[in-house]
Length: 229
Image (tube, rainbow, N blue to C red; front, side):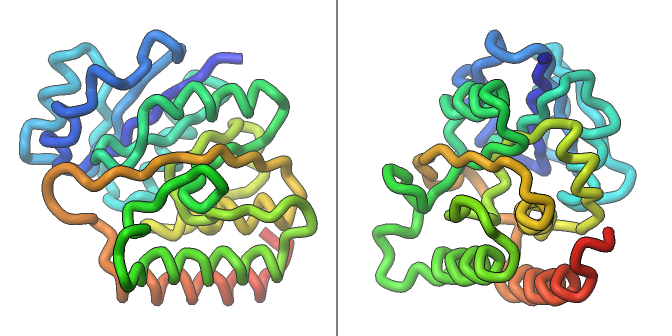
C-alpha cells in the first residue's frame, strides 16, 4: 500500500523551517501540502523544495482533510501539522499501524509514555477538556479498546475507512468526528504514545471557547444521528 503525507499549513513558516529536514520524506510515497492561504512564505518554501501545494478555496481544517482525500494518490493518509507540536519521527510509526491492519492510528498525548505540552502547567485546561471529550465519546460509543486521545489531529487513516466514516465536520472538530464515527463503526483503531512539543511561532489557530462550543454541538449531533450518516 502507498502512503500520502498531508502537511496542513496556514502561516507556519517558522515551524516549517525548523522541522522540514526532520520529516522522513524518504519513508513515504507522496507528500503534499494543503494550505489555508498563507502569506508568510510557507507556500513558496514548499514549492521551492518540490512539494505539491494545494491552496484551499474554502478555508477550514475539515475542508483540508477532505481535499487530502480527493487529491492523495496513496492508500494511507497521514495528517501532519508542521507547527512544532507534532513529532515527525512518529510518522513511520503511524504508517506501520495501518500496515498491521488497523483502520486508523492516532498519536496520543495521553497514552502511557506520551506527553502533553500542558503536563507541567498547574491548570492544564485544554488537556482537561480533551480528556472530558474523550471520556464522553468512549462512554457513549466505544465497545473496543479505550481511545485516549480522540482529538489529536496527528493521525493516519486508510482511504477505505475515511470513506466509511463519511466525514463532514468543519474546522478543528474534524478529528473528534473521525474518532466518534470509528467507534460507531467498530473500526480498528490503534494509538502510539507521542511527545507533544511547544508550538513554534505564532498562536494556535484553535480558539478555546468557540472550539469548545463546536465540540459540544457535534457531540450532541452525533448522539442524535446515531449510525445514520
